[in-house]
Image (tube, rainbow, N blue to C red; front, side, top):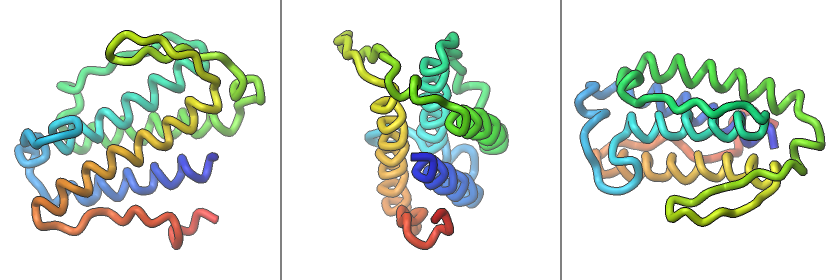
Length: 156
């Protein structure tokens, strides 16, 4: 499972590099679908990951304010710090974490109990889902998106 997190972090860093060709205004431009902008989508990916890990660690969730991370450099630095924390958590987690019961509440208010393993796998799928949206926007802008290919990344 750790390899898939590393895959996502590697792709995320490639997206941050990809973003450097655009102005902050372009990165914040409202778009259709997803989280409505490139930077907001990258922020959302990091924010959700850190909140899920907080739940798994039975720590209080921190809600970060996007307005403090509208700058690509600040957002990437925050992402790097959170990646380090998540990596350390995954490296040190016990089997108990995989079996831990976690409550997931949908936007509509539905409460869904799930296990820690399901949460971790959801975190991986969540980032893949949102980077798919980034890929669509990249193509709409006439640019090649970051490769989603897992093979050849040197992870295995």
